[in-house]
Length: 612
Image (cartoon, rainbow, N blue to C red; front, side, top):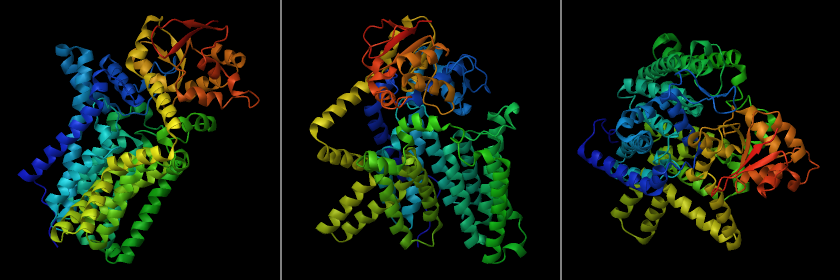
C-alpha cells in the first residue's frame, strides 16, 4: 500500500489548485457577477450580513448583536457571529476612502467569497490527493476533485460573488478539520489544528455541531481500535477544540450573557459541548492510566463511561437545548413561517413536493456515499476514508432533516467521487472497451453535482406539462423581481418609518433604505413575524386591530411573492375564504379604508400608509 500524500505543496498540486480555482471562479463570476455588481441579493442572508457590516462600521458595539431596525423599538438579537462581520468590514473600511463605500462593498463582495473559494479548492485538492494516493492515483484524483468541486452545486455557489453568508467559511473550516484528522496518525498535532477549526466553526454557526460530533466520534473509534497510533492525535483534537472554543466564547459573548443558555449561537451550552467533549478526548488520549486502556474492552468501557457522563452533564446543565436551536419557536411559528422556508424542508418532504429537485439537492452526495462504499471495501484498514465518511454521514444527517445540509453533503462527497472517476479512467486506459468507456462517463457524470441538476431539470421538463412549466417560470420571474435592488429604491421617497412587511422583503428593505421592518426570515424574530403573519391572514377588519396596535407606519407587500397566496390559503379564521383575507385583497391591489396607498412609481412593490 502506498503512503499518504505528503503535506507540502509541489508544483503539480499548485497547478491543479490554481486551475481548479480559476475554473470555479470563472463559472461563479459568469453566473453571479452581474448581480454582485448591482448588489442584487437573491439570498436574504447576504443582504442582512451587509446590513450588519454597515452597522459595525457605523459604530455599533462589538457585543451589541441586536438588529435595531428589525421589530423596533426593542429590535431582534441576531444569532450570527460578529467575527465574520469584522472580516468583511475590514476591506470595506480600507477601500472606502479610495472607492467610496458603495464600490468598496462591491469589491468586498468579490474578494471575500473568491478568496475563500481558493482555500476551499486547496483543501479539496489536498484531501482528494490523500484519498487517491492509496491506489497510486494521487494526481488523477486531485484533478478529478478540482473539476468536481468547480461543478459542485449547491456547495460551490456559496463562494459566488455577493455571498456574505457564513456557509462558505463553515465549508472551509469543515474541510480543514477533515484534512487535519486525516494526518493525525503521522502528525498528531494536525488533529489539534482540526480541533481549532471545529471550535471556530461551532462559534460561527450551530450547523457545525454535527461536524464536531463526527470528529470526536471518528477519532474516538480510531483510538479504540489502534490507541498506539491515534492516542496523541485524539488528545490534540480535544485540546484544540476546547482552546479555540474558550477563545471564541470570550471574544464573542459578553460577560452579561455567560450564564444565559442560548441554543442557536456561541454561548455557554456550545462552550460546554466543546469543553466536555475536548476533556473526554484529552483524558482518553493522554490522561487515562494504562490499567484502564490496556485492552479493547477496557477502552470501550472507559470511553462509554466518560461519554455518557458528558452527555448527562450536558442534558442536566442545558435541558432547554435538547430540542436544538429552534426549540424556542412557537407551534404557530413552525407551522406558518418555517414551512415557507425552502431550505428547512426535510428530504422526505421534498420527495413529496418536488421529487425531481432531489437530484439537484442530493444526487452528488448520494453518488459520493456509493463511491465511499467501494473505496472502503478496498481500504477498510485505512483511517482516511473513515474520517471523510464520518463527515459525509454527519452532513447527510443534516440533509435528511433539512435540505440546507446539501452544500456540506455535496462537498464532503467530492473526494470519494473524484477517486471513483480516477479509478474508472485508469481501468479504461488499462483495457479500453466500450463498456469501460461508458462506465467512466457514468462515474464522471455522477460525481458532478451540476450534472445531477441538469438531469433533474430535464426530468421535470419531461414530466411536467409545458403550460404548467411556463406558468411556473413566469411566476418565479415575477417573484424574483420583488427582490431586485431597484425595486426598493422608490421606498426612500416615503418618510422614514416602520413597515409591516412580508418577511422575504425584510432584509432588502434594511439594506436599501433607512426604514425599519417588523419581519425578516430569522427564527428569533417571533413577535414581529407573527404580527405580520396574523395580520395578513386575517380579514381586513380583524387585521386592522392587529396593525393599529403594532408599531407599523406602513404595510409593504409584493403581490407576486408566494407569501401572498400562502397567507390567503391559511386564514386565521377557518371560516374565512382565501379571497377574504387581507393578503388576498392586497394581492389584487384592493385595500381597506384604514390603509392609504403610497405612490412608488415603477416597482412591483406596493406600499400603504397606516391610517390611525
